[in-house]
Amino acid sequence: MNVNKTRYRADSLIHYLSRVTAKGHLTIGLTSKDISTTKNEHADWGVMGLGFCPGKSCIASTFRLKGNNKLEKLYKVAIHELGHTQGLPHCPVKTCLMRDAEGKDHLNEETGFCASCKAVLIKAGWDLR
Image (cartoon, rainbow, N blue to C red; front, side):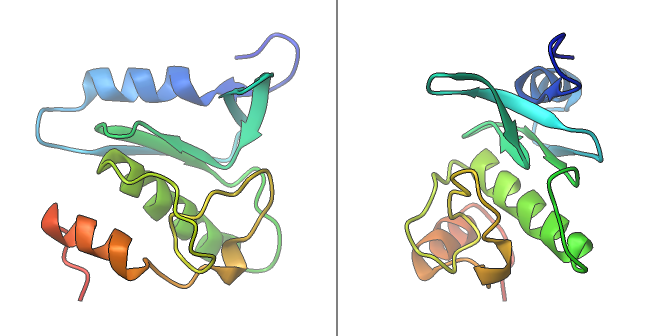
């Protein structure tokens, strides 16, 4: 936990999750707590989620999600972070689930994976019919 705020370090949490995740498996942590990571000059940047890219663990939080569709938004954040575990970087396509939040909530604009990101995930064994 960050001593200056009530945020939990997302990177520390996913390091732990990686250590306890069996080979060939993925683990996603879900929380309602405020989570953060270091981003550029910001030592404590609040995030909706974080995933190793590539890796075998990630985390998503409802803390920053607003609106009547918080569960749908959590699903999108979770899928985004799982995409990172498969090696997907942020995507410039505005409607793609791999879009970078850039400190904002664009989740209502995201409708699915773009063709490029979808192809990577299908190659990794995801069934995205």
